[in-house]
Length: 411
Length: 221
Picture 1: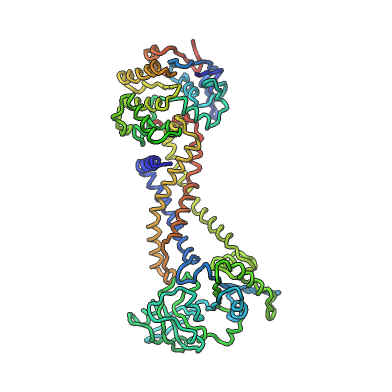
Picture 2 (picture 1 turned 60 degrees about the vertical axis):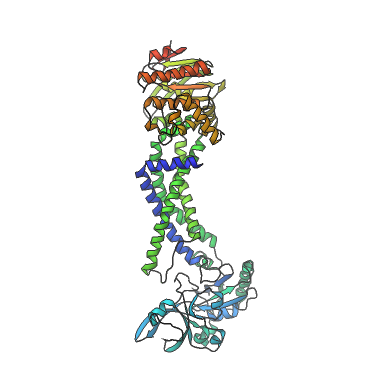
């Protein structure tokens, strides 16, 4: 296919305005929807600041404990992470943080609902937060159990308006904390870093929590190099297998995962004994293809009726030496051009939809947008969509005898 | 050039079987100018289509340049149509979205010919039919006679051994019909091309070397 083919395709599309408009609407709507879903997926599992570098950071997100008559799944406890994960030899370092918990801050007689996290001071080194003012709390703050806090920019605005927040005080659960830093808001979909207020672990951790096997924590494991992933996972698997479990617990299943692997472990593994990221990705692809199937069939129908209008042209091309294969290539190319045009139109539609989602408050601090990865997936979806919708009409037309094709309609 | 032996063409639907051609045997030598005549619906175009490998016979054998094309696949048939045969149709069958020169280039698109060589040969073919000034026009901008001359240029741009013309003057007035007929005569006489032409017009048929007559799908003498 060359510039002349592209010119001919664009001319055909311009001449059949109604067909082109209907097709572009269907293609762009379908691809825009896929790009919106891809963007959400990318923000949840892609490499986005301030989450830690995904190539060298794994996490212990979930665990499953089972006994003779019970099964219990949830987040690991501080005690488990401290004893079994922090002591692994492969990782460079391990940072324990709590899952976000709902709480309330009282300021000037008003109550503000917030999401609170307790984090170890190394959390600030591992993550890529941008401080708008102040600085993170330190190891000294943590070990001295100082009542200090880092807040996000929305909490600063809600509590103190446009004024600086550093050194101001906030009241949480009857205790007074001093603000030491302010960071940018983080989308609630970024589970490792999302939150409104961060307190030092040392100021919040109870003696009971320090020993708990189960609880609302997660362990972030920083590797020296991405190549250490398998070794770290194997070491952790050996470690939990050898663990002496208290009470009636017979078995513990967990894993050292990326966030996506953790989701696949929870969704697709019967006993959380293994993660299946490839299977989960394949399922997501399957759903995407199914989603594209109905509009693709509609487009194929339209393409058949449009191509039947051009059956005389197909006949002429065959009469002068085109093979069925060359005609399939030509018709698929034309369909690809149409789909790519639909893809280009879908970009602003998807961007607008994501901007509306960001403003809707459906996800706190949502910052969905279209980046290179989302665009690449969108392009791949356009090509898949083009093949699904174009292959049957192209094959059917290419099989016509030339005389039969020319009888269709004279040009 | 062409041999047909006991060729039959039957169109079948669920209920009806229509015999379009029955027991046709004929031979056309290289360089001959032959016309096919007969009333409407007698199978003239069907015969021409089978001769030009645009349709397959239900029975019988067709040989082109001594080669039986009966069992040929899509690629072999496409190659034979591309290299050996040029078609001229009653309703021109020009592609409306392509310019005149792009229409004429079509047979060369399916050969390994560079874009510049395609343009050069298409321009030469248009020059031969007296339309070099209309290269960049579109078919809808031309008269019927001009469109048919473009179709003739397209048929001869690939220098085929055999030209098949299905009522080439049927949609033209007598003056432009005469122009097209003169072109075909010149191709036969001057270039030695084999030309087979379907026509209703006894006057046009009389200018060919031989006439094959059909009636109800059968050859009559």
